[in-house]
Image 1 (cartoon, rainbow, N blue to C red):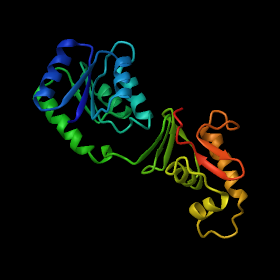
Image 2 (spheres, rainbow, N blue to C red):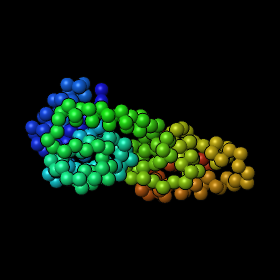
Image 3 (cartoon, rainbow, N blue to C red):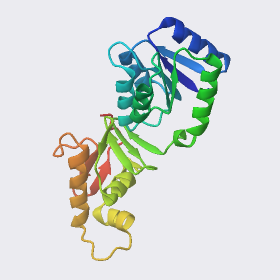
Image 4 (cartoon, rainbow, N blue to C red):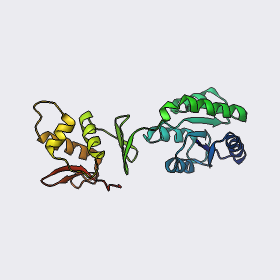
Length: 232
């Protein structure tokens, strides 16, 4: 069942929207302000957000921007609601990353139609992606991206490949030669110390303290491994 987050500080509007969504078979989560909305987005799997522009505290534009900037939430479709009908508000919402826009008052039937259309249109981008979860460190294999605490980590293509190889085999220790064969394969004239250089660069990006790594560790005299118990 698809879960829809309704963010609106007007109880009557939130109740009306929730009632009609539930009638269509959707699971509905409600939030009355921006902070509560961000907490729900963080803790739940959300299929779509119906987001009021005018909210106490963080407004809809700010919430939309935060959602779009976080690699773990940026693909959640957003329909923005507002009591204002001016064109500049609609453009502002869409430019921030909203997928659709409706001005209050609106027809519940039209809103449901918009919800279904947006979910169909954004279906491909919401398909589960292959992500390696190391606690606060996420490795998205489909996007070739790494993020830590929701912020992007800058790795080269080879560094990414090396990190993925070790992360998929958590706890197993690999020598330099084994990693050369696995990651560099048939490339000629690659020195074993090249592995050390790349490991050091990866640690500089993903570790809080590269000299005392939490994720990418060394087994002295043997090789390197990604700690299977990393929860940081």
